[in-house]
Image 1 (cartoon, one colour):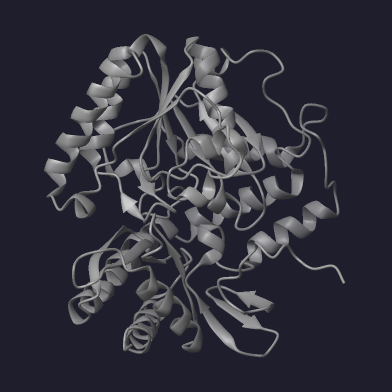
Image 2 (cartoon, rainbow, N blue to C red):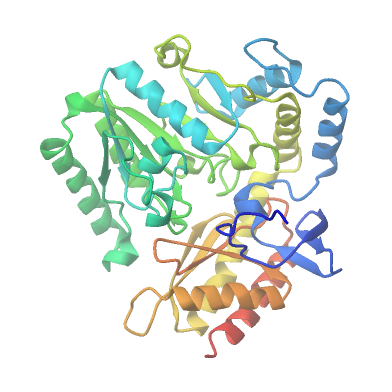
Length: 418
């Protein structure tokens, strides 16, 4: 009998029957509050009526129109709508299917545009599982081990992870910028460095907001040295942090922006955006793909952007995020195993540590599993697996936040009692 790969370990035993908004109903009839959203994908909640209607209508028109062969209206409309929310100057878009593909397209563009070989990524970042994207990833060895050699020309610089270092944020930022400058002097000269790539909030690396001054420091160095500044907004973008883009909590702006996940409420589509001047430096034939910019996914993305705008979901993420952060902070004060509570908007996390301050993956896993018995779905992350991430839909209500925090608290009482 054929089965799924045994390596695909399920975080929960739930087999979904149907879902709506923040709620999933399993085939067993149990109703679960979903604070995973498919790892930040179902931004408008499960099966938002407007997204469903757009996809259904498009399926009846054309499903696949390969976009270097045939253009289609949903993709043209999506490009126009993205132009309304993209940072100024990013007026050219290339579409793919996944975050990994978009990441790889961004570094290919940076290398071609600059004629330089090296990419500097930051410790704890997650950029994907394909070879080039995994080469940039250091959120955990599981993403990059066992299939070496990885892509050459990648160098890692420290991320200002203040809690891990035991410092305040400003000290951590000073350290990380100083070490980046040292890297540029000793490992990858500016003449060899094509790009910096970083997430505005680390995803699998532990839901760590990148301090604004660090992003601004990267922007300044990129300008000074002619380095392409790539912001990986795959998870933090499309309203997740209470701003439309995660980097908008700072004054920094990207040369290349990568988006995926929440862009189409569950349909696979990703994109990179850059200026026409920069995008034009890609070599002919270097951008393409069979399924990129799929018509149904594009129609769903158009509907998603409309819902985000019309229902004020960025502002809802900000307000509900304040409520969620407050609730998690209360739990952090109640339970000594919580070393840090952090996040932006609806991208929040609890980091679990032992009495000695060491990462406690067992505690995080116990809480995540105990939450299932509370009919609440959560996920873990972090380099040590000791972080529980809380990722509600952007449509989440105040009552659902309160109920979610209550269930997290109940799960912590059970999971941490041992």
